Image (tube, rainbow, N blue to C red; front, top):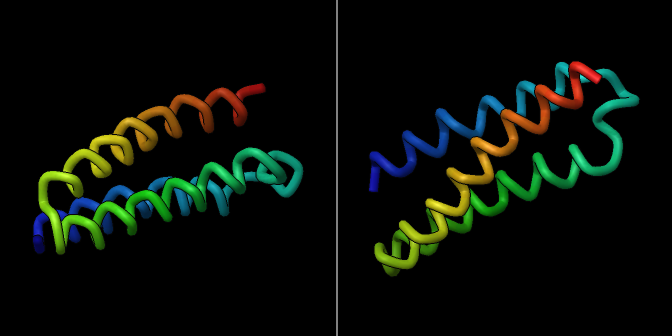
Length: 80
């Protein structure tokens, strides 16, 4: 369980710091919902993993895919 908490803590810092380093214009709307939705899915994965590890790993996989997609999307929005 501590490994999952450490992984979540390490990976959630990147989207949150990236979000706050964007300009006001670029972080309105979609990026706001995506950033905080991603953090909510990660927290949900941690909470579910406490009770049911198999389901928590599935939700954690969804979180990790969303995390990787966030990197691509935020880089595209910063470039354009």
